[in-house]
Image: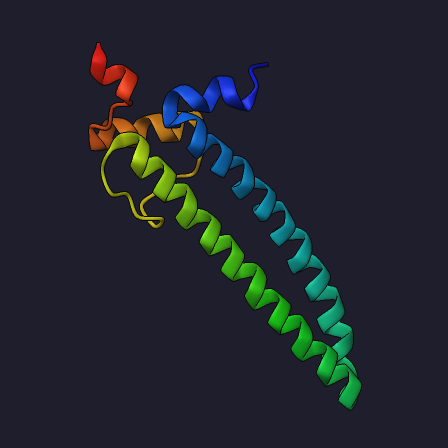
Length: 119
């Protein structure tokens, strides 16, 4: 099975591939955080005690920070892909980073990597 570099470096370059790896780690951390928050918040808000409410508020703050990190990670990925293709691509415009979906997205937008442009 090919590794991440073999799949993505030809498509988006080394810098964007590094950002894609970071994005995947942030996404994994986000999933774990949301699960932990759901469990902890159910206990915190369910008790109705001042300590429970405080814990619940801390959990909400952690969730906001985790979500902000996820958004920032997507923005950095979009910026790196923009540099690779030489056009501005917003973080909301990025497809799911699966090879077939990404290739179809590139084809619809007529995006060609610098290597393809030289041919």
